[in-house]
Amino acid sequence: MYRCAFAAAAFVASAVLTMPAAAQLQRMFPQNTLRGTMVFGEDRQVTLNGRATQLSPGSRIRNQDNLIVMAASLAGGRALVHYTVDTGGAQVRDVWILRPEEAAIKPWPSTLEEAQTWVFDATTMTWSKP
Image 1 (cartoon, helix red, strand yellow):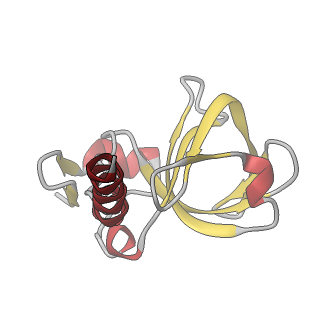
Image 2: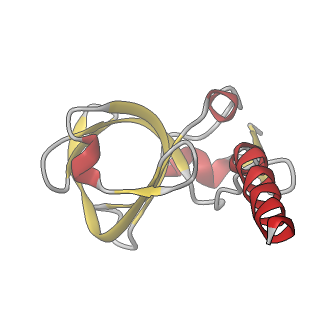
């Protein structure tokens, strides 16, 4: 009985100690990801780079720990983000709130025009201007 309790305690301790390390793995962003400043409003309303827009139905927001969060929990907040737009280009589909080390990666395109003319290296997750 004591061995089982010790094994369970050791398992829990190892899981707790490795969680922060797992949360800090490099996130892989799709090539069509843009960077911007987002202010979260009520419901699905957001302001992206100073322009009012909205989140698409079924959009996903990932926080700095890569966990999905609800837009309502971020209302009134402001963050530097990576984001994708839906196929029509009118609404925001996916959002990743950036960690400081991710925000330090520069340059990163902020418009579709930049993304179409710059070169993306998926292995290092960096962009270069031509």
